[in-house]
Amino acid sequence: VQLSYAIGVAKPLSLFVETYGTEQGSLSADDITNVIKIAFDCRPGAIAQTLALREPKYQETAAYCHFVREPYTQGGIKFFEWENSN
Image (cartoon, rainbow, N blue to C red; front, side, top):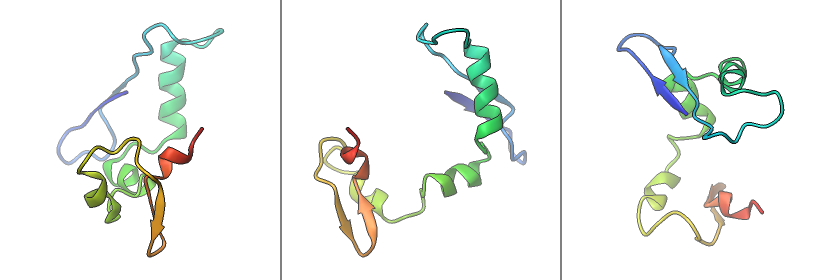
């Protein structure tokens, strides 16, 4: 997924999805792009809020690789919770 922005413009100027041919059924890459435009708020502030990018957990995840780490919760903040997905 590629987003491009202009200074002072909240919404992305363009959104591009490359599926490398993995789209299935009658769903095309353009269809997927249109679904993303409708389903997700792609403004930078909204992305930061949705992904909780301002939480302090990212300091911890910035070192020593962020995959194959033991998930834990500290002070009500979940660290490495993506490792729980099977």
